[in-house]
Length: 128
Ligand SMILES: Cc1cc2nc3c(=O)[nH]c(=O)nc-3n(C[C@H](O)[C@H](O)[C@H](O)COP(=O)(O)O)c2cc1C
Image (cartoon, rainbow, N blue to C red):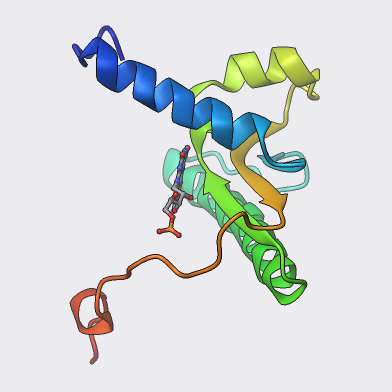
C-alpha cells in the first residue's frame, strides 16, 4: 500500500480492519485448490480452464458452507486476501506445497444483525 502511494491514515485504517477481521472471529476456514487430481493438458488454453474449474469448485464448496452456516444462525465473511499473500500463508500454516490458498472465510455468531445494501437486480442481471 505504501508502494501504491496510499496515505498513511488509509493504510492504518485498512490494517486495523484486516486485523479485526482476522483476529476476532472464533473460526477461520481457508479454502485451498490442489490441481493434483485434475486433468493435465498440453496447451495453456485448456490448462487455464481446468484451473478455473478448480477455482469454481473451491468457491462452490465455500459458498455452500456459507449457506449452511447461515441456516445455523452463523455469520461468515469472504476474504480473498490469501491470494495476495500466498507465501506468507504457506509459511504460517505449513500447507502442502501444491495447495493454493484461494479464500478465507471467517465464521461465528454475528455481532450485528441485518443485511447490507445490494444493487437492484435489474442492474446486475441481463434477462434474455
Ligand atoms: C470475492 C470477494 C473477496 C473479498 N475479499 C475481501 C478481503 O480480502 N478482505 C476484506 O476485508 N473483505 C473482502 N471482501 C468483502 C467482504 O466479504 C464483504 O463482502 C464486505 O465486508 C461487505 O459485506 P456485504 O457483502 O455483506 O455487504 C470480499 C468480498 C468478495 C465477494
